[in-house]
Image 1 (cartoon, one colour):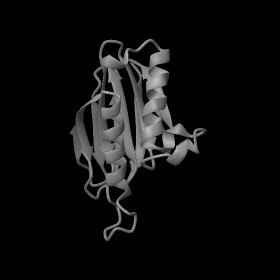
Image 2 (cartoon, rainbow, N blue to C red; image 1 turned 180 degrees about the vertical axis):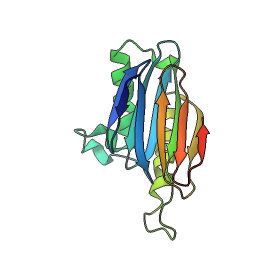
Image 3 (cartoon, one colour; image 1 turned 180 degrees about the horizontal axis):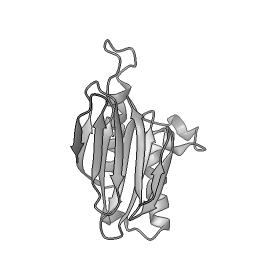
Image 4 (tube, helix red, strand yellow; image 1 turned 90 degrees about the vertical axis):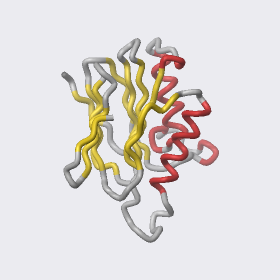
Length: 157
């Protein structure tokens, strides 16, 4: 099985049996879209909630709102019907207590939820919030996300 790594502000679209992975999610959020019908999935490692005015369209994976749109367009280009898509979210932690980051993690998750809702995409599950960093493996043969925290906990969502 091929593994495709997604870095900060990046996204990837792959077909099963590939696996998409990302590491080091702190306040960043992994957004995944998946078509069980086509066995095609996409993952973005977003850093910020919104691209104000779309000024950074050269890096659509950086923002929750532009990442979702870029993923939808890319998957549509592969023949995926947006009505067949479901989403999962992981990350969005508050790594620094006391509001130093202005609740970026929570705002990333909120922006992703709103954007997905706007496009009519159901969120099946999420492992977001808290204060622990995460790494994620997205298995495109099943649509499962394996989420590992920095303290060693592992959940499958």
